[in-house]
Amino acid sequence: MKKTTIQISFDTEKLDALRQYMTGKETEINTEMEDALAKIYRRVVPREVQNFLEMREARDAKKLARPVRQNTPRTASGGMNNGQEGAAQ
Image 1 (cartoon, one colour):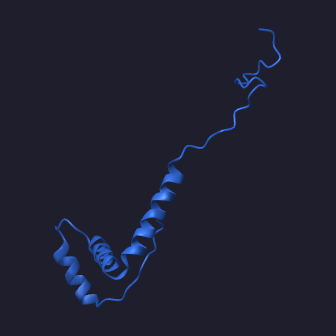
Image 2 (cartoon, rainbow, N blue to C red):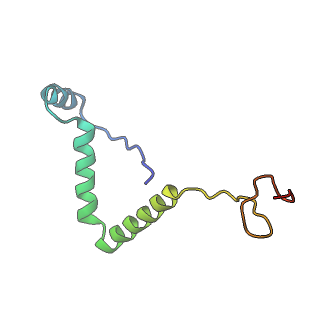
């Protein structure tokens, strides 16, 4: 799915303190915020809508994963045309 950037306002001193105490931890503020938003999404958005979006995402991913078929010229007999059409065999 396409991602969107969100900006929020937060007290500067609190953010500085948060950054200070998150230093050395195995997580980052962005990761924590993404996890919090995902939790809110699961709680608020009806399950049917979540299922629909998941199906649509899977369908779109499948379309992107499909190899593009190239139209290969064929002879009248249905074989591959290797530039030998009409040549004596």
